[in-house]
Length: 249
Image (cartoon, rainbow, N blue to C red; front, top):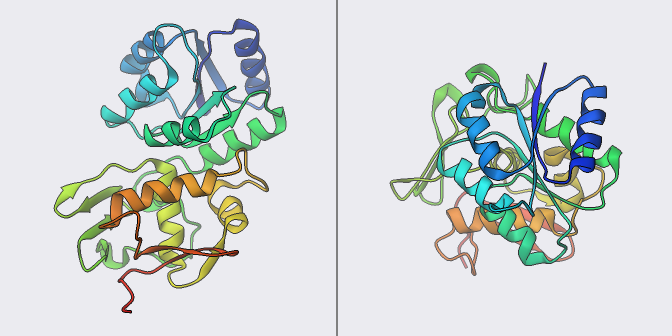
């Protein structure tokens, strides 16, 4: 049974989310603030498969909770809930390591859909760690890491290890999933709608710039100059295209 931790200080909302998640067959624990969440995870981290994290918490914001977990090496999927609608708020959420940013008030079916899809992409043991369906081509054939950007970047999708210019880089589970999709479709133009459906498992975006914000992160990690990308290319009016090696001219 999948275990979900809810971190929400509004009791009525926490109770409502907990009730509906339990009705879906999940084991649910709810706490009311950031320190309580971190304390619970310190003891029970191995049992938690997903965190539903409110942004505006007393004393310690959801940003701080998320950032603390990522700095500790946790790759548990995090769904952040917030009434804030500014682009910079969403970007900050992604920058500290959240996987999905869902605005309040949210539709219950959308919340449940996001939860299902994040749990389905939860990192599994090495044989299926990539989260790719059986029979799809492997970007780590024969156990070798995928290298690109002239060998500067090295990614092992089986172990979640990422190295750029000799330095380890930590990607969230959703960032790894997005990168894997680009690698498997190298050279092809992929639309935002295609990415939302095949990476996030969503028929529409919970925010208007969900994909774009994640691309910003990938460029920050892998491009020499994120303002002039050579690998994660924008295709005006269409979407994005990934190329492993910079194109001449």
